[in-house]
Length: 210
Ligand SMILES: [Zn+2]
Image 1 (cartoon, rainbow, N blue to C red):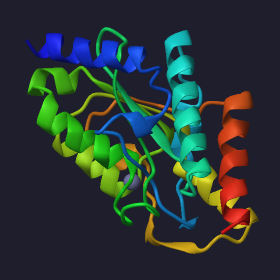
Image 2: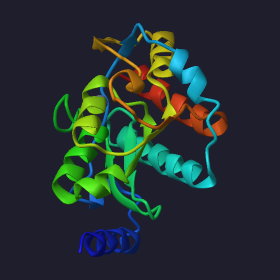
Image 3: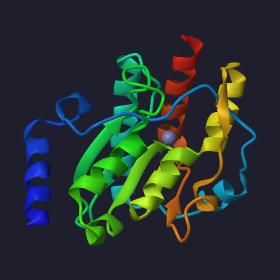
């Protein structure tokens, strides 16, 4: 029954041409803010060597598109999706910090959605793809609802570097690599090349204008 519901959702998203999180009532938002303080990069360097599949790349492109949508809506460019074990996109979200409140990050929104809509087993078999590595709040939410792995486009450390370049406002928290918050988590990231440049460009564009 769960799969049937998810299948319907997925089909509905396809029918709706759901590139836009605006169309789904569970979509949301992500990260917040300004610059990131003191970031650790060791784990990210290790992760960058992880192999990304073609599916991973397609899903990260979707996250980038959601981030761009957030930017166009006047919010910070972050986007995330949940993918089930059949490689189906079952939920999407984008940053809505400016639209709702400072906690409206896409990753915690998706964690909340998963808590309500997925069984414990299905949550463990669900991967979250995201344009930017989870902040500590979202990482904790991801862990508490026992979602599966994480694939991110850019690391929090990279974001911190970019934001320093444009003198963005400092964030009120320190960003910590997700592996240091979530126990026994599979993590891939950051990715490289045009996609990484794409999210960097969006971030710089937002912070140059705000
Ligand atoms: Zn967050």
